[in-house]
Length: 342
Length: 284
Image 1 (cartoon, rainbow over the protein chains, first blue to last red):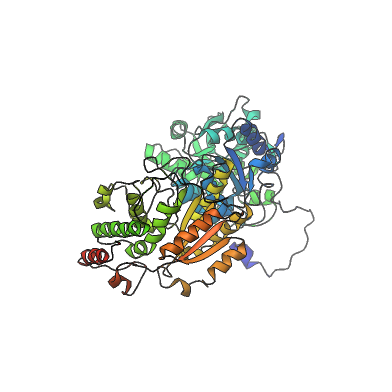
Image 2 (cartoon, rainbow over the protein chains, first blue to last red):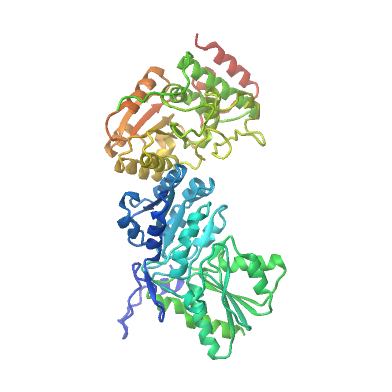
């Protein structure tokens, strides 16, 4: 609960003039102006599985909402419905990995990171088994409230040795990360964008391809460096276009791999004298921003440094555009904060 | 299906002698550290003797042989018992007993897969073994590998919700290649298991979930052999559970008589006495 909602819970409300629906879990992320791709994760997994019979898919009653149903429909004999039992989901995935398979296990990010953490830690990560975890509803991508908002998942998993962490921006990242997850021998936790997923990165950088462990400059700029991951790279790029019209030149360094972090690129880019802003769809505690801050501090690189991210509190329920504005992770929110800091 | 033919080395050493050897090796390891889960080790020795010398198939010289039956030690703190069994089975060398629990040992005090040949999983976070076993049993079926997965768990793990997720899943997937062995010694960290979390009617519970359940005296060799044989030979798709009622510290009477706790206190001079007491009961 938030303090504000708690204080107002006995106040009667009236219907607003404009109807803004709560963004449901099944909804695709709205991204105005971008083309979309349907179910890039499920389709990429099917494609990869055609030539790799070690791949199996498991879900805990959320295959439809993680796009794993595409795989289940295409290869039903390789799909395991484990029921609404996340602890079992990840221990069984560990058991299948022990027997030589490459399990892709999917659920919502909250359930993997909160409910099943010990099972991922001990059954999977401690033994460095190649279980590939793909989780929908990362950060603030649903209006259902804290039960479904995984605003601290990366902080939880960053402390776990052996884990590789991916926070994709768009359909290109999601499709590109699947073969990278397969090639990576360690366990992987990937945040997932599902449904109609926007194509963002190739519009700004036509030759962009996802590379595991690599940060990539999507657009350069001399005034500000935004270091971002996930959907916040989209927000940063859109904000950069807006700020460009106002004479502010913003570079956007996209960091889809949170761990291992591409520290060389981050140190090099942050050392060029620009205002340095991190942007993440995650609490400002323990995510990309603090990872970058620690990296720069250890390297002795000290730009003016600001963080955009979710506050250290349980978030409100409501419509996503409202919430993204409220917490400063909408395009306008990003642009406004950057201007204030210049 | 009938009991699968074992290819493990034949031996004329009796199961009673195997169990006695396992107890002795566990006591020797306990003496090295001056501590250890010796109550559990002495209690489970008969179950391990039947597992390794009557039921399971394996190759001592090749612990990762694809055709082996998998043995998962969900209860990592029972490692002292399993090391003793693995030494008895020829998978670990006997001359490493003095390294037990020491720095750089292959036999740390809680069992971990990465340290020890024959230790299949990293147990110890209780309630995980059966779920991993479900996945392995699914994987074996996928590969058409006829091996069994054995999961040894404790009565305390019956309190973990994850255990029951795995119990339901094993039935859902008709895992007739999964044999769960529950060591019921009625002792967990804070006291008797039966006083902690509505434990009781165990066999009926597993049966109600759809398992083939047997409850036996876990220190009665004939009963154990019959139960393991029945579990392996059963010709239906149910997963199998053998609930073994064991006596902690079995085989060393002055420890059996002591007020039993999760971590049985053994004074420095008592290890030799315990070994001497065990010697008195050595099978002929």
